Image (cartoon, rainbow, N blue to C red):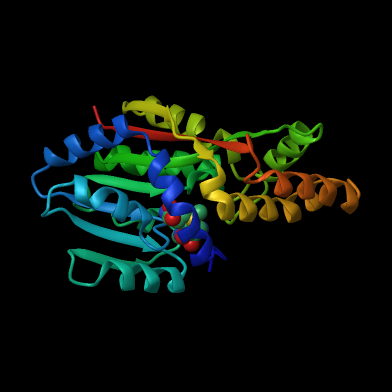
Length: 264
Ligand SMILES: C[S@@+](CC[C@H](N)C(=O)[O-])C[C@H]1O[C@@H](n2cnc3c(N)ncnc32)[C@H](O)[C@@H]1O
């Protein structure tokens, strides 16, 4: 079980949808249209956000295999997508990369996954993708950028601390955190893939108040775990940031990168 909460995934999904890089989505759709019998493998599928973002753009006959190690999220994905839409749901721990079912798969997709992963995981996945001549669309990899207006003197320190915490083990060994897209791109390019990486930031305004609040509240535990800052300092900063949500001129940006790697 991963501990990702379906409520959090539902909250971030609209912001993710707006953030996905349109040019990469178009390029991916065009690639899949050229495949004879397209099968898409979505890894770390959660409740199916990637499927919902892509299904309308891909050929109607495209089949999907959705993998996650969390049975509750898989159940929720099946409930929301339905079981007769050419979509199969399977429990799989991605750490078992040798058993990743790539037979017949044209493209692997993932969203908000690779910042949790380690470099050895990315290298092993790149090997398997290269052997199978399979493309990869990896969206919404956190890139280490968080900015807010109005600013606070502790913003940069808090982001730096959070980014250090992003490198701690999230179930795959030492996590790449903000380095994920660059590392993945390097491993895939070294194996002959044509790789594009594009920015896909969340632009957070008053309409995404709940997302901003939960994002900030989710920083508290990592900040206290990674630093010896007094709780009162972290809480004071959070109180300021939470208070700024929805105020005139109050906004935020969280940086991500989307990657599309296609076999040569
Ligand atoms: C941040 S969520 C993203 C979910 C979904 N792709 C989305 O964009 O909403 C990360 C997902 O990776 C899954 N995950 C984490 N570790 C995993 C593992 N070892 N094997 C399979 N799935 C894993 C989690 O269960 C979760 O669904």
